[in-house]
Image 1 (spheres, rainbow, N blue to C red):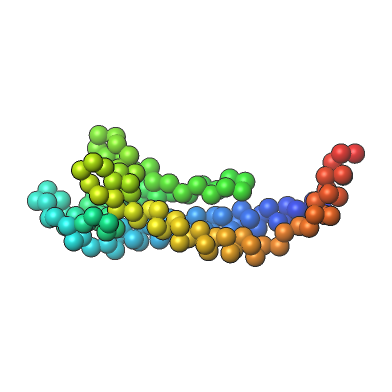
Image 2 (image 1 turned 90 degrees about the vertical axis):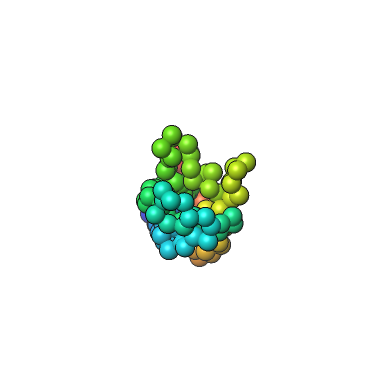
Length: 141
């Protein structure tokens, strides 16, 4: 009984790690492959992104800073890049600021990936209620 429950939890962890890697890879590719339609600033190597476009890589810091962490039944996907002054630049890109319209690359990717993760998790065989009750009774003894 315990092995079946442990196998179920292992399958969930495997699915979460797989999807964490897929999403962070997709976010990285999105920025690497993005071509700007915005202003070309003389001090930057690439044309900047226009409002509502995907961000364009200028230094490489943004696309190299995507990470994921899975713990128990949670999946956390984040970007820890900071501007030269320490500001959370990925959040500013995604949500926008007073002076810059959002480039919602992060939210859009997460929303589309969530559907695939839900389907993957739904396909994992869940222990039935009777089995779980037996396990609980076993620990109460």
